[in-house]
Image (cartoon, one colour):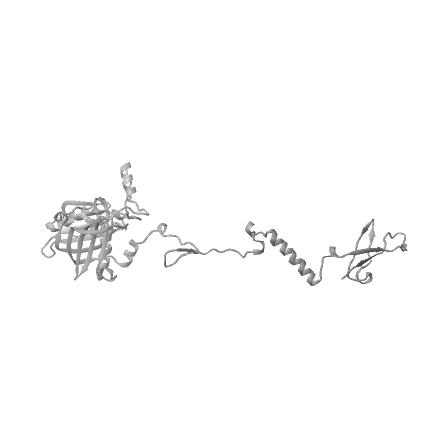
Length: 364
């Protein structure tokens, strides 16, 4: 028989607000982290946990009380602490003869352990040991990764790089001001070691729009060695990185981008009849009076060359016959026309005249 999960209902308004904050969101807030010390913790590991808390403020909490558990052996108590403080990242420090100066970094998904990475500190120099000015609280660092293991997907360093980004990136933003970058965290993977260095960025005048940048080491300076890992399977990790459908950009039809990032669009229009296309009447396209006269003279010259003239310009002579009508009911009279083109028998035809009007039927 399965265990029925109890649904927690808030009894107060404050409890209701807390549960509302922990509900899933389309755009999550900045990730919170906790730094926990084990039952036995060395001074080096303790200083590292405190420095990590300073770099992650205000999204990090340090627990000074000792906790008697090991993340690789039992994670139930650690998961309950993370759920209580709404933290998805944690750092655990411990020390023993087999694993001195031990640091365990981990992250959670759906209130359960997703990845665990165990690191050993060989050399450490904290923030307080550098006498340089420090960064402001809440500022985002510039993360730099160097080394072939960080770009090899099959190695554990590839997943460790992703975990370092989750730890130190802070709140996600779309735009960053250049002067807002105050420090750099450099991670170098070489000779099976991970070298962590922190630098302070100082901007100086260069005589140009882009300032001259100088780096000054401010700490922490850590030499890590990778010990144990407990990584989630690829399918679970893929589901943890899945984005909701609402945040995925919708594909727009007939819109593409070229290699330079320019947006190109395709427009579909029906076949147009250009004969009926209205155009704008411009004064510059109108013919001048001189052009009109030249065009008229050219037409007259062409008409004279071809021997064709308008019917209105042809001289006519109307001749009517005086013969009486044979039919008394027929009021028409025969009319013949003489033109300059030829005799009346060749050009003219009989016309009907009614009520004083003359209709001419010309052949030719």
